[in-house]
Length: 92
Image 1 (cartoon, rainbow, N blue to C red):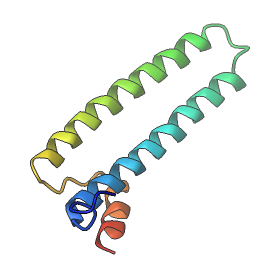
Image 2: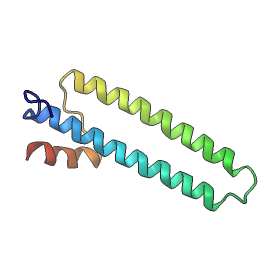
Image 3: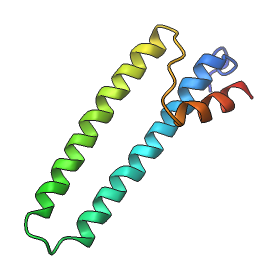
Image 4: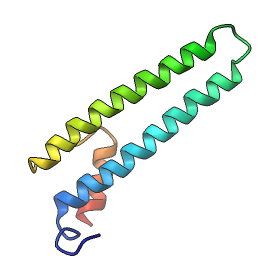
């Protein structure tokens, strides 16, 4: 959004990739929550759902840190599926 950076393809790429990653994580966490609500009658399922949320959250946090480090070094690190979409949007 800022004037000197909004025209740089690298910045646009990492911005779109971050938005895409956030959307995928939101959908994944929503899916896990809906599975937990649908299977709430099974004893202990809420513990498993909580652990699934924790594992997904930790993995995404570590992936997010890794991508931030790559972006800060000026590297084009592309995540599978999300990166292709982000690169098309960044170059347009």
